[in-house]
Amino acid sequence: MSTPAFAVLGLGEAGGRLAGDLVAAGVEVRGYDPAAAAPDGVVTAAGPAEAVAGCSVVLCVATAAAAANAAEGALPGLERDAVYADLNTAGPALKRELAGLVAASGARFADVALLGPVPTRGLATPVLAAGAGADSFAEHLRPLGMPVEVVSGAPGDAAALKLLRSVFMKGLAAAALESLDAAVAAGHAEWLEGQLADVIGPDLLKRLVAGSRLHAERRVDEMDAACDLLVSLGVEPRIAAASRDVLTALAVETPPGEPE
Image (cartoon, rainbow, N blue to C red):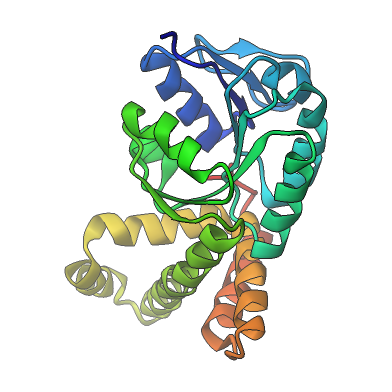
């Protein structure tokens, strides 16, 4: 049986890495991104509908802000029963909206939440999947090396779990950034960096600090979604809101980075 073709919408840092890994795994990959060049081996399409035509699996790795436009642009080319997987960090409501758009075409939607740095891990990045297409997404991606945990058949459930995790991860990053800024001002930056690295590990510390600066603008949207989720659950988003404020300040200071 031939390997199904994949389409990747969004070929930035994360999408480009996934597309490249799929090519290396022997998969036919078509890609579309109006701003980024395709990795070697990826067939570049003129638009999203052309990219997804004839593909069994579509990975949308744009941004949450562009997710609806990407899905709408892909609809004319989506194959019936294809899996359309949205890998953006967005709120559950947006994921359910996307699921409705995709279902109307006869394709199956998968709400996919990334639980690690894709540029570093590629297809080995652990993910959560929910929605009508979650099981099929897992069946296609697990043999290629992606650890997929199917959490439910309801779109938005994977997104909600990711955002609950983000409250802690982005809160930890905000705490590290603030304490390090204070240590610099006090003249003890090297000492404190060693202390934090002893607690959470040097690799995670570097990822939290560097990642927050590089991806600040996108993560502001992520923490907005996390705040909305917590409010809907009756939980006051004190840490989530503070993390959003830290990221907002960083976004002003730092040029926007690629989506993870």
